[in-house]
Length: 178
View 1 (cartoon, helix red, strand yellow):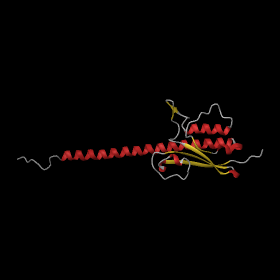
View 2: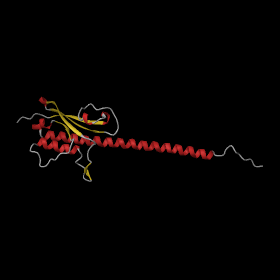
View 3: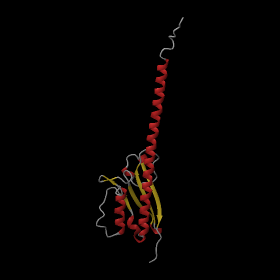
View 4: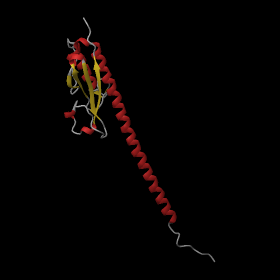
């Protein structure tokens, strides 16, 4: 005589359903990991671009040590500037070119500047004029919230200070005897 087991009906269907749910949760976890990885990669790229632009201005100032006081400015790069014909003063030309680099003029795509950080701007401040010591800062908008940076450069430009990023350096220009 053959016995039929009624209590095991549908067990395979439940196992398949559980396997699908576990797979979906795993895939959602992988998507979240990829999104976080992309955000970290974008932050890293922007920090590298800021470091390049910061070093560029340091070198420009070091190349023109007699006129270092003419480089002091706030919110450089808020708007793209026209640098041609070149301003007579080297410092003015350097600031104009650096402003355009902050706006992304180094790389373009379909006539749009795409080469810099989001909402980038720069500040050059005198720390001690007697010793020719200056602070150069590049700020930009990050993609995820972190701690608020200590620099006040561009502070008014960002509604949420936790997405504002800042990279600064201090440069001392030697006073040369003429």
